[in-house]
Image (cartoon, rainbow, N blue to C red):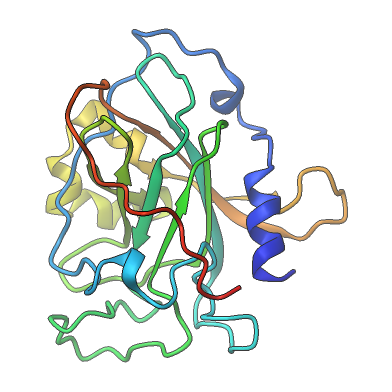
Length: 236
């Protein structure tokens, strides 16, 4: 499946999990906790990179596959009442399989992966859905494996947060950033990977280990955010 079809198939999925189809009450949802951006946000920023689409596993259809286990990360962006939010830019960035970031200040000894696209960016539609194809991040020194998120919505405060993996329970429990999240909210930023079809309507569709992440933004206000000039598509 090429990069364009993966994007369309994943964006069209109807989630099988109960939380995705539920009608949420205003008292049910807490805002997704903010967490540190960390020192390795891409330079230049993601929207100015040559490559930043939703498939991080290779830089284009002709390049080799990056090292590591391929997974999907998908979810919805909603408000406190559970209403899906459109025109929201969702950005992710992470370490490669070896635990190294593509950033001039990461001086780690682990090798960079020349085939991995270390970041991605997309805009939600009316369904609020986002989806990325990536690899499981390696362990960065001093941290548990995680994926950084930056979420930019019109008239809402920008959210920067991180997503963790349930399988790394022991490492998570020792991670200072993870433990800075209020205990009642840690589950909301921790995902379990379960095999799910890339195309829910095709029984023969390939499956990928998939993590779900519901992002709850704060209330709308007159504050300005800067979502950029729209999603360029430099690889198509």
